[in-house]
Image 1 (cartoon, helix red, strand yellow):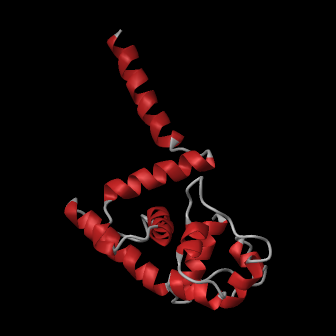
Image 2: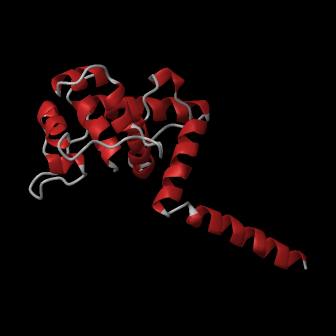
Length: 165
């Protein structure tokens, strides 16, 4: 994840608001933290001298803010976000008349978890359309757009065209 995502996840895990984190770093207001957590191209990044302040206030390592977990320790998911992820998927699958199964949809669960970590809206304002848009944007950013699904659909369409000819 990007620095902005790691900072937000660490802040949430620490149970701090943006304002509380800013005050713990000796700054007034939350706008600086909001900028650092923003994934917008115009967002500010912290100065090198500010990163240790953020890490100390959050009780995390500087490396963890840059996405590097210690080799001997894998990051522990936030239990509240795990529960929120499960509730979201249960509700989404329920509206489709299906039951969510963590074993068969573990990758989807991981993606929704990552989305919820980065989405600041209240849980009742999240929906599948917004999740799909976020995932597509994320995959394009990573350079791994869902070519597998698109490729399968294109191959099926191509096969149908050849059979008609």
